[in-house]
Each structure stands twice: as structure tokens, then as C-alpha cells.
Image: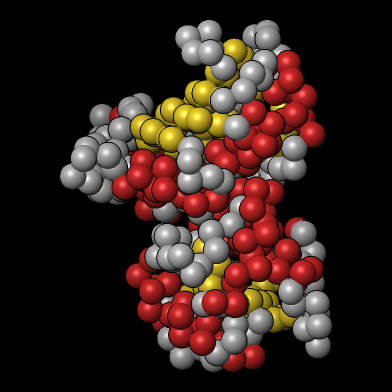
Amino acid sequence: MGIKVAVVGATGNVGREMLNILAEREFPAEEVVALASTRSVGREAGFGDKTLKVKALDNFDFSTTDIALFAAGGDVSRKYAERAAQTGCVVIDNSSAFRMDPDVPLVVPEVNSADLAGYKRRNIIANPNCSTAQLVVALKPLHDRAKIKRVVVATYQSASGAGREAMDELFIQTKGIYVNDQPSPRAFPKQIAFNVIPEIDVFMEDGETKEEWKMTAETKKILDPAIKLTATCVRVPTFVGHAEAVNIEFEQPLDDDEARDILREAPGCMVVDKREEGGYVTPVECVGEYATFISRIRVDPTVEYGLNLWVVSDNLRKGAALNAVQIAETLVARYLKKAA
């Protein structure tokens, strides 16, 4: 028998993208089921050249399902993921609900696929935050070569990272400004059209936002707990694609030419770095792509061993749906071969 896969949150941005990527990559599934809340039952979800009828998550029996990809938010995951996992289904969860659980692997396949070996402790595998996923793909090969001491990152995160309502708000505000009819912010704390907002997720007691904390904690868990990282996370008025300005300090010497060569050979990375007008990748250009794009590689002369990078990726893909599907692919190849 083949693999049976369920996609939870199939009508949302990430859920739809999961279905797209499962089809694009010809995932070895005998059956794919689209799940969502009861209000979405009967709606249609595209899966390659097929159309799936959305079923209710509330009463779905996961006992005959091999893998469940959860893309419905933390509250849904906390309510249903463990229930699914207890039936023997392996849950790959895109929310933050289980990321810091020591018994749950937090995985980016290009970086720490070996951690998947521990998935049976809970039958749950966590997907990292979208901004973390693309960052660690770029950091991993450089860390292996010269050992990273410290990272300072500023993110430029698209509206899609906050969901479909946030994308709608950006569109409506942008259109409204031209006709002098701009509605009040709802999905964002301030105007997002023609603006940038240095607030993603809630503020914590030390002044960090939860998004900034996630980047630090998740990078340590995925890559190396000894790495020091500080982040400033900013929402910008683009629809899809996150960008990051990354400053790295190493323990060992590493110049920009060698870093460029290393990154060109690294899994998941695509170097586009011409020192000329337009010789870099922007969020618009990364939409629909699988790769993490790296540009503007240059030496930081203010520290002994430092580099600067510009890192761009489609946050709905590598930052969420693609990473989850890659985890599922690795899981099938290494641990679920008999079921396949």
C-alpha cells in the first residue's frame, strides 16, 4: 500500500501551497485528503490536475493516515496534532506549538535531517518559523566551514506571513490610498501600505517581539546552541517573499570569495551575486521558487572575521509548505519505506 497524506488547513495560504508542492514534486502518495474546519467542508482544493473536496477535521479518523501536514495555526495543532499522532500518524506541524518541545525534532532537511531519527518520541515533527528556515539554510554551510559566533539579522517580511486577511488588507489599503478611501488597520497594528512595521507577533518583557525570539531560539535548536543571534523583524508591504540582511561573525577566517563558492555548492542555496546594478534577487523574483537565494556577499571590515549577506526566499514555500513536504519526503525515504 502507498502513503496516505492529510493536509490540515487546506484552504489557507500555506495549506494550498502544500497541496501544490505535493503535486509538483510527485510525492509518492496513494491518497491525499484535504481537511479544514466544518465551515469549509465541501469547498474545493486544487491538487495538481485534480480537485479535492474538503473534509471536516473535527471528526476525521487519522488512524489510516501515514502523514498529516498541519497548516492551521497553533490552536488547531494543540487540539488535534497530538490526537492524530497517538493514532500512529506522523504529524509535520507548521505552527509554533511544538517547536521548542525537547521531544519534538525541529527540522530543516538541508541543515539537520539527522534529527528526524527522534520523531517517534512524539510522532510529531515541527517546521520552523518562516524567517528562521531560510536563514539556517544560508548559515549551515558557512558554520560548517568557519564556525559562527554571532549573527545580527534584520528581516523584511511579506504580508503573506500574517495570513490571507493580512494580504487582503495590504491590497485594500494600497488601492484605497489612490482614491482617498483608506480603511483603518485590522490585521496589522499600523498602516501597512507604503509603510514598514517593526512589530511581528507580540512584544515580550525585554522589548523583543515573539518573532525575534523565535529566530534566536529556533536557530540555536536547529543549528548550534552556542551561536549568539539578535534579530529585528519588520513587516513590509510586499505580498510574498521574505528578505533578510544578515551580518555574521566567525571564529575562523572566511572571505567573500570562499563563502560564495561554498554557498554555490550548498543544498537549497542559489547564489545570485553580481556586483553591478540589479545583480541580486528581490522578493518578487523568488516567488514560486524552491531555493533560498543569497546575494550581496561581502566582507564586514568592522570585525576580525565577518561577512554580510542578503537572503531571500518564498516564505510560503521554503518558509512553510516546501520545508514540510521535504520533511515528509525524507521521512518516507528513511523511515517509512515499508509503508511505501
